[in-house]
Image 1 (spheres, rainbow, N blue to C red):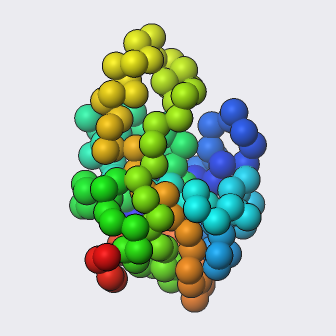
Image 2: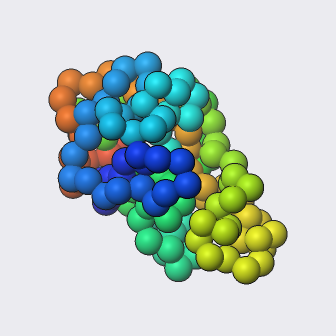
Length: 144
C-alpha cells in the first residue's frame, strides 16, 4: 500500500496516517465513513493520480495502492487483502459533483471525464486481523 488517509470531516482534505484500524461491516476507525456500508473505504491506484497530476488523498480515497490499475473496475464481490485487513469491493466509485473543485480544476466536465473508470473502488471492511499500515502488501483474494 502506497498511502493511507482518514477522511475526518466533510469538505476537508483527508489526513495522511501511517496506520488505521478496520471495522468489519464498515470502514476505518476515526474516518467519517466508518459506519457506512457501501462506500466505507475508497481504494485508488496511484497510476490514476499520476495520470492526472494528483497526489495521494486528492481523490478523497482512504487507500492508495500501486500495481492494480484496474481496481476501479473490479467486479462487486471481489475481495482485496491489504495487510491484515480484507475488503469487499462493492462497485466503482463515481466521481462526485465536487471532486473537480476540491482539486482546483477549472474545467469540471473535463476533470470528471478524465476520472472515468479511475476514481477507485468503493469497499467495505469484511475482516480485520490487525491494523492496516502503509507499506502493507495488497493482493486480490477472490475475483468475483
